[in-house]
Length: 370
Image 1: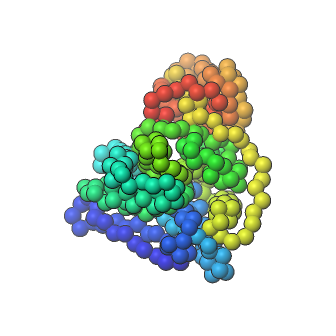
Image 2 (image 1 turned 45 degrees about the horizontal axis):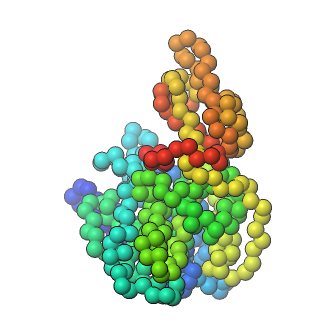
């Protein structure tokens, strides 16, 4: 295991932050898998799993099992880790400007494509190397200003060369689920199976330029730009949602880290063999995921547990009006798995109350929550 720290200035004079990266195996070996936790710094499960995965990888490396290369960032957002307001940790949004730490990553597609004009070949693997070099050059041309942009730039640089990227997150309360692009699904399906995902949400573009799409998106865009040249998907990236914020537990974390280790075996990063269990779900379009919203303010309770298959028209949540005592039902308009909900139980009008993974697309525009 090799440790590397990236140090960058904070916003105030005399302040600095640092990001730790742990590297396993030969840096030039393939496949290369990049794993990070805590980009939303108030989401502990991903940081726990990334840290425990590093311990498992250190053991595997000592046993001579590393065939590929793995980079692990246990805590990807030191800026957000330091944002504690009146005793509450706030790590999803930058308190300086309100921007989501997992949005606004650069789209390198156009700049990389410009650098590839007249250079692509008939050899798919040669083209993968050329695209990776063009993406690196496009990123290096950008000069980040301020700590949040310096962090985005650094994290992109760490992951840009990887064959597979796992960005570990969680929801308020949730079943295990993941988001990815359709082109990446075949490569990531074994991960969804090993982690027992109850929902898999696919979208070509989900909106907001999140970290995972900034890495896989350019590959599909460049392949479409140069249809006469074979350009395989050089990076399959995903946002993995490790249940809810309170699910920070070493026992559960070890199970999840073990599932990711088994996925690395499946990819050939680690020696050994692994049997894939039956899938717990089939992928559905992110455009078919219903976001339930509160029609009124009040106390929130749920009529069905997480993981339930709900039917269109079924009551999923109930809001109790504190002035009148009336109960206002919140019903599903689609059929699917009820896979996520907020951790709070006081609702304001318009609050998102839960997510249902339906198989019928009905939304467009930005598909992710802010």
